[in-house]
Image (cartoon, rainbow over all chains, first blue to last red; front, side, top):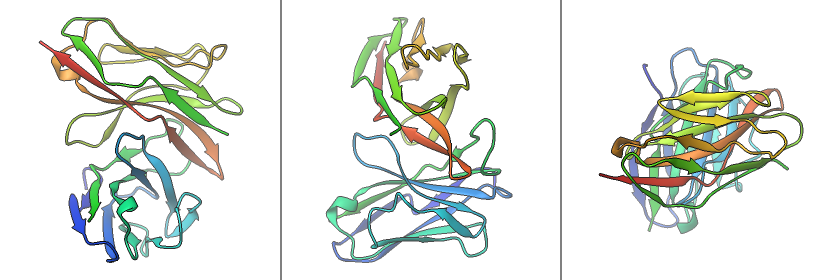
Length: 116
Length: 114
């Protein structure tokens, strides 16, 4: 597609529920990134995919968080047993490759997750 | 470790005023530096960048100079407009683990009034 698409744009869920957040990157982009932006903070790195594999998942806060990219395109961020502290905007970005000289990240508009 | 510190907001200015948003960084080696902007309801957009010391990035009237001696990358604009109202993020980029990794500051909200 023309840009990075994230769905849903807003998600409200109850504490303890499971949620999935979807990211559809720019067609042909092999690198995909997830960031989390808490209220009043800058985006914080969660995970990086190169192709189908998670090359760096060091930013995932705990084992309730998991992400997949089975066909090297669309990615899903999965959060189990959600907690109120998970409330944030989850941002996805993609780039043509992992070592673009201009750090050509294109960000989506994000999914605002609210855990009540 | 690598980190970015930027001035707290909100910054409130009248139209045509001069803007400075301070940004300093801590990093090993020689990172690239960026300013991203987030307009209400939109995704992060790259505003400008600089990849080495003394480089000046510029776009849409905004400028920032990579100052290695002061580890700074302050954002400036000579005359702001109401349409510049947004949240501005300073970021550094490092090659880490075979890919470019961006590390962001906390953001500075700018409100420009007519």
